[in-house]
Amino acid sequence: MSSPQSNHLNDLLRQCAELMDLWLKAFRTPDGLIKLRHTPMEVAQFKVLSESLSQVQEELSSLAGLKV
Image 1 (cartoon, one colour):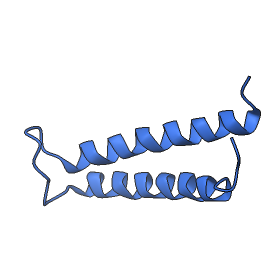
Image 2: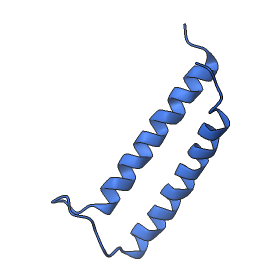
Image 3: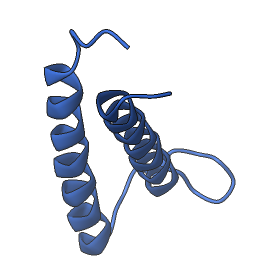
């Protein structure tokens, strides 16, 4: 049986993976190349993604000593 802390950690890791996937998709063109120019809307989305990733990273860091 998994603990609430373990479930929370798994949720954070899943959220981090989803955010990273969105981040990578936003930086790539349909043919897989890295975009060099971005629209103002894309820049705003990057800021939101960055903030979300930072929040997840802070929570993961606080749980780093957790023994699962």
